[in-house]
Every structure is written in C-alpha cells, then in structure tokens.
Length: 124
Image 1 (cartoon, rainbow, N blue to C red):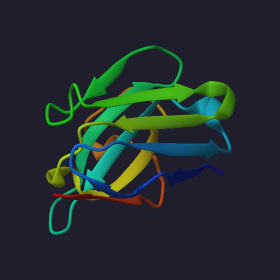
Image 2: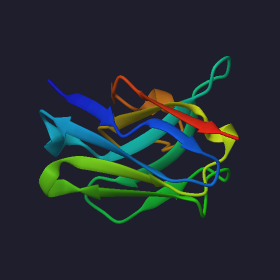
Image 3: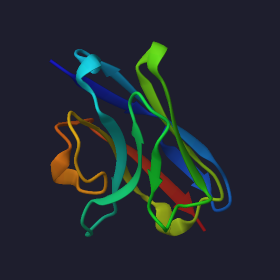
Image 4: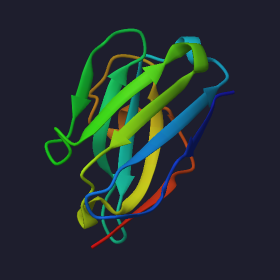
C-alpha cells in the first residue's frame, strides 16, 4: 500500500514563499514519476509540476515556470515543491501524486496514488 502525505501549506502574503513536502511510504520502488497538482475553489484540478523518480527530468506548467521548483530526495522518499513569488492566483489545495509507468505527466488520470492535499492561501 502506498501513502502520500503532503505538508507545508499555509497562509502567505503575495510575493512570499512556501515549500511543500510530500512524504511517500510503501512501494516507492514502483514509482516512475511524481507530480504536483492544484485545485482552486470552483475550478478543475490542474497540473503544476512533475519529476522523474529516478532521473533528473522536470516539467512545469507555464503559469509557475520560473517561480516554482520541484525536487526530490529519494533517500527520504520525499518530493518538494519550492514556491517563490507567490500570487493570489496560486491559492488552491495542492496535491502530490505518484505515477507508476510512462504517461503524460500533465494528465491527472495517469497518476495512480494521491495525497490528501494541503491548502495554500496567498493574500494580496
């Protein structure tokens, strides 16, 4: 059984920074790629960033490119999302997810396991 637990969300002023963490447990050896998605109130879930579990490939949504950085620590089975220059439009529940085989990194349906989400609120 795989568990993903996000942490690090909170309230921050516009222009500020937060770092989200996603701790994975269980069969992490099966992971192919990890992703971060977000869902704002009344909107659909959208792709934010992704990283290969055993390679350096990273992917970002255009809306966060240059402001967010995804990274991982395999020894700790943890994926991070460093968020800088935050904007009110970044306000959402952020979810991490694990993909088990090759697929489109931006498609939420390609991810097998999901965390419970962590709220990020950016005040203007």
